[in-house]
Image (tube, rainbow, N blue to C red; front, side, top):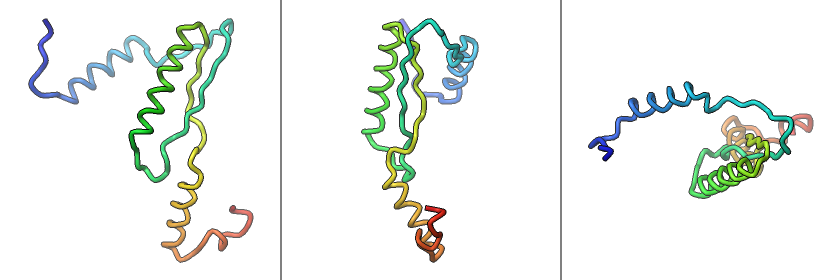
Amino acid sequence: MIEFPDKYNIKESEDKWRNFWREKEVFKSSVNKDKEKYSVVIPPPNVTGILHIGHILNNTIQDIYCRWKRMKGYEVCWVPGMDHAGISTQIMVERFLAKQGITKYDLGEKHL
């Protein structure tokens, strides 16, 4: 039977698994040109930096879906994508500019 420690030792655990992943080349990728291609583009977290359960749920579903497609024989590429929350980004940028006493309109059209 496996014994679990009384306390979680993050350094020991992280070092163990990081070394395992490196030794097994878990993150190494090589494209198989013979397989049908499939890709999923994921958005990064919002610029607000406020993560919520929806982020976890969304990423978990995408991870499961990508793994399933790999098992079905696809060459899957799961890559970070573009900002999916332009309004949140715009609000944060406008707040940043306001602290400097300017608005987005002060920047002129070429910066919009």
